[in-house]
Length: 135
Image (cartoon, rainbow, N blue to C red; front, side, top):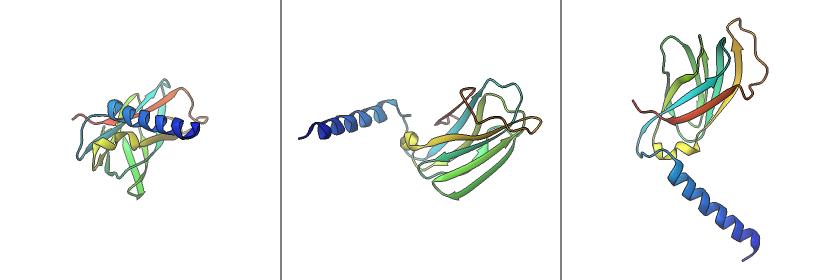
């Protein structure tokens, strides 16, 4: 067995161990939540994309936000959240299995301040997380 194959096998084994030990425990249908950390005091809107496994029923965590969702396929979701954005949970979506939590990727596409001015491309001032929703 070549060195590259051995290294690939080790990497694959470690990925499986990492996914099973660091993923959210669960199984079966459930809800995921997307949260934002920001240091900006005047965020007024964010556009976020979620990709990965099947998802449905996106909804805002806080009814004070205006919330727009577009889902052209079951594997892609684009969401705009508008309001006095602060750090914390923004929206949820349903998944067929919470065991797939690590397969979802979340990306911050745009941020605007409360005067509707786009900020420079998002940087280290913003951090998104996605996790299993504990209702």
